[in-house]
Every structure is written in structure tokens, then in C-alpha cells.
Length: 504
Image 1 (cartoon, rainbow, N blue to C red):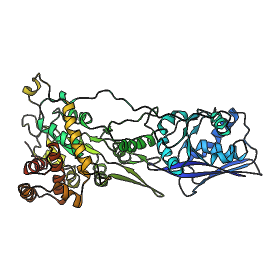
Image 2 (image 1 turned 180 degrees about the vertical axis):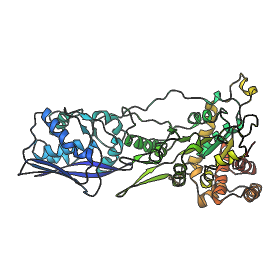
Image 3 (image 1 turned 90 degrees about the vertical axis):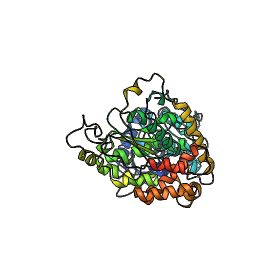
Image 4 (image 1 turned 90 degrees about the horizontal axis):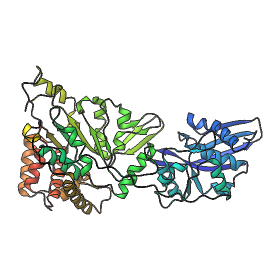
């Protein structure tokens, strides 16, 4: 007899349906798993033997063959334990085979029969919804998977509970969705003294998801400003929340089934590897660019990152997705993030202060910032110099403008963009607009057009730079609630494209 259970193999955040076929045939006792299993899948047979023993079930003394179909799709991870166990139990007629036809399952078995949490319950629930099946998953993953309301989710704590549910002896209740994670109030912009131009750039970046580069001496507040960016970003929409949560589920970062509507904020260290930033490694895991999807990727000390790592960001910035290539598969992850970077003007950091600068001024500045390639630099919509904070600003007792009013203006600008792009669901903010749509929404008035053409010629803007100025101007106009892009908006947008001035 051949019994079939169903599970998924993950390709990016997509779950591909896998048939777990079990044959129990006469012959010398053996247990073989075929269908491109990795080591974790192959080790399932030892976990099964112990889990069955804990339930007083003897492993059949026959030839057991497990085929994971499609056989040419790599199978990775311990979540295949539960469906393999169910297929074996159905093959020996302990479980009704017809029950397994309507269920998709995943989970790792411990030696005592408990079902251990695994990554990817939320994408698995999405796959179950597409296949019109129920989902059987570990108890700790039930709240996470239950966010897909159209899928009946059952979350047994042990293999015995799963068997009792499928045989009707003790049916399980449907799992309830987990809670929306609550976050403590983070750093507030009121803590920032001075730096009005950088604060303004931060507001524009948040309103239209424009990439921002800040340059300034050590201690000027670049990192402080960047870490306050989440406080002015609007909550994620339900669609964005689901997208982001699926990536975090696959990475195993969702705790107790709780999802978050707060924009992600990822800040990898400059020693991080390419696989950590872009994705890859064992199982082609999502990298920091994908974990920052719908949120912020903050790269502090930008020139200290390996140049090869920085240049791999160029394509994801443009396309909004990253492809992790393998010999037998290409894994795609979404990665529409707001890139915020901070850099010292030179290695010593005091390029503009003759009393503190090193002996290599000004060449050290050109060498240091030269580590950032021209094509990557061209992708920053906003470039801001952050000067050292004066003692007069530090001594001011009155706090700066708090995050709340800034967040209100950002939310209003985002709402304008939401209404504008209602007929274009793939576009959410001005930074996504391109081609004829960009010309339609961001065509400046006559004076603004003349200003933009003169600036483009004088600054030698590339076609990409020209269009990025238009997008930024559109966002500045939205913050001013102006339906038309005018010359002041163009002038401010162009001012953020000026090259950094060496030594000042």
C-alpha cells in the first residue's frame, strides 16, 4: 500500500506542495528516503523510530520507502518529520489515509514524540490556502499560521495528539491568531539638537521612501538620527504586514505567533558577509535586505563595508527583489527597503577641521568616500552633510520637534500617495513610480522645469539622477500638500543631490 501525506518545500517565501509518498513492502527491514532530501530530512527516520517507541508503536519490520515528490526539488529542513510520520502511520493503517488528503502538515519530532516548532508556518499556511487544505503544525506555530483566516489550523503539541485528532478520538480546536506585537516607545526626534537640514531630509526620506546618505564627523549625530527614523514611519498596512511577517516566519524570527505592524529596522555590522546582507548560506536564507522589506536598512560606517557587498545592493535597490542563485535553483526574496547610510568624510573623520585632521587632507577624503562606487552613490536620492553640533545647540534647554508631529506629516503625505496610486497596486510610494507614470504625477511647472534642466546640465545628472530628483520633488510637494510640483520643490530636491564638498 502507498499512503500519501502533504507538506511544502520553501522556495523563497513561497511554499511548493510536496507529496510524501510512503510504501511499506515485504523485504529486509529498511527505511529509505528519496527525492533529494538533505541531511536533516534523512535523519528523520531516527527521530521517527524513537517517537513511535514513545507511543508504543513498533516500526514495521518491512521495507519502508519514502518518496518526496517532485523528486527533482531539493528538500531541506526538519519540518518534513511530521508528514513522513503521518504517511508511515497511514501506510500501516493506524491513520485513515483519506484524512491526509485534506491536510498539509509540517513539524519536527523530538525523541519523546513532541512536535517542535519550525520556521515557515505562515508561508505554509498560505500554501494550504491556495490548495484548499487544512494545516497541521506544531503548537508553538499555531498562532502564527492562524493569521491566514481562510485556513483551518490545528496545532497539536505531540504526535499522539495529532493521531488522536486525525482518528477522531480527540479532535483539536482551531488555533487562534497570535497577538499583534506591542513595542515600547523608541528613541524620539526630540532628543536631537540642531541638525535641521538632516531632520528635514529624514522626513522626506520617510514620506517617499527615498534613500538617504549622511556624511559628517564622528559624534555629529548621524546614527542618532537614523535610529529615530522608525518613530516617524507609519504603521505597516495589512498587506505589508503579511509580506514582512512571511519573511520573518521563514527566518524563524516570529515569536509566539505575534506579528508586528512596526516597520523593520535592520542595522548589520560592516563586518557582515555578503550572504548575511543579501541572503544565502545554508538553505538560501533571507538576508538583511529582505528582513528590512517594507522597513529601513541602516548601514553605519558605509565605506567600511566590503565594496563587493555594497555593489550587490545596486540591483535590489532598483528591482525591489533579490535573487539568491544556486546550481539547482534561483530563490527570490522581496526587498523594498529604505536605505539609510552614514559615513565619516574621511578615515580620520575630521576632514573639515584643520586642527584635528590627519596629514593626508584632502586626499584621505577622496580615497575614503571613493570606496562607494559611483553607481551606488547615484542611487541615493538625498545626500546630507551633518556638521558637528555646536555647543550653543547642545546648551539649548528646549527640546527639538518631537517625532509625533513629524510622523503626522509623513502619514498625510503617504495617504496622498496611497490615493494617487490606487489604480497601481504594485506602486505604494513615490520612489516606486517610473516611466510615463512618473512624468504624469511629477511634471513640474514651467519655472520648475527650467530650473531642473539647468541643474541637470550643471551637475551632470544621469538619467537615473534626473528621475530621482523628480520623485523627491513630488514627495516634497506632497509634504506641502501641493498638487503641482513647483520650482521651490525642485530646488530643494536638487540641493540634496549636490556632491559633498571636500574639506568643508
